[in-house]
Image (cartoon, rainbow, N blue to C red):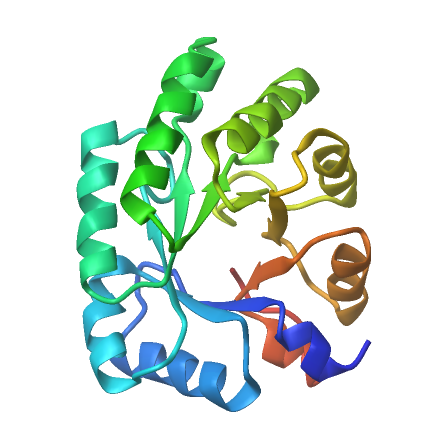
Length: 220
C-alpha cells in the first residue's frame, strides 16, 4: 500500500484545545496537497476554512469529546456545522446513557443526528475504551439501525484509542452499509496499514504526515 493510498483514507485531524488559526490553515493546506479523505477540525473553524479553501472536504465534531451534552445541543451544533459548510460530522454518543442501560436514548439521539445530516456523512464515536464487549456489540447494532455511515472507535481523548481487536469485533457485528473509522493511538505506518487491512475505511490521526515521513507520531 502506497503512502498516497493510505492518505486517501486519512481524516487529517487537529482537535487540540490550543489549535490556532495558523495551525488550522496548515492542516487545510496539507489536506489539499496530500489529498487526504478530509480534514477534521473544531466547529469554530469550519466556516472560515470553508470560505478560504473551497472544495476541501471538511469534517467536524459534535458533542466532543465527552458526549454528555443534550441531544438538542448536539442537533444545534450539527445544524450550525452543516450550515457553515461541513461535509462530515463525527458525533460522540452519550456514554452515560450506555452505562445506564438506556440504549433507546442512544439510538434516538443518533437517529436525530442522521436526520439532520441528511446526505452528509455521519460517523458515530462510541469511545471503546469505556465499553464492555457486550456494550460494543450493542452499539454496533444501534449504529447500523440508525442509518449512520460509520462507527468510529475513539475520540483520541479517552483513556485509550483504537485496537485491532475492536475493529474486528465491529466487522462481525455491523451491517453491510456501515464503515469503520479507527482513531486514537495510531503511531506507525504499520499501524495504519494494519487498520486498513483489517477493514477500516478511515483513519483519524494528526500524525499521518509525520508518520509517513518517518518522523514518528504526534498527538491526536
